[in-house]
Amino acid sequence: MAKQLKTCEVAVGALSNEYGRAPIVVSEEIVESMRVGSVIIDVAIDRGGCFETSELTSHEQPIFIKHNVIHYCVPNIPSGFARTASQAISNVLMPLLLQISEEGGIDEMVWHKLNVREGIYLFKGALTDIYMSEKFNIKYTDLNLLIASRR
Image (cartoon, rainbow, N blue to C red; front, side):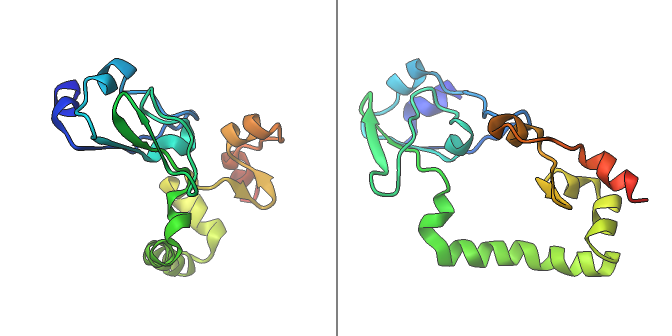
């Protein structure tokens, strides 16, 4: 990866981590070796960023330059493109909503589809994401216990 980054013009970091913070996979030393004027887009900045040189930016001041590399580290990028983001999320959610209705409701969907459970942060008024719980010091309830208790 370091070899590819030295010659690229645009590097997009879009990593996530089920344990909270995104892993840093590109060191400052590698960023220093990148082409002058190349661009880093750190989509993982919502989770801390995956480039060691990433710093939080905003839509008002979206870029900064470090080691002659342009950094774009705006969290929640879709909010800057509301119409496109809305259409994209609709394309994802509509089939899911239809599937929920075919399964017999959200409770049945969550019970039968293990992969859906990974995307649930709140269920029946309870916070079910342990990392959000730790971050905001809010009581955590295991989703598996919640759905099993309703059976």
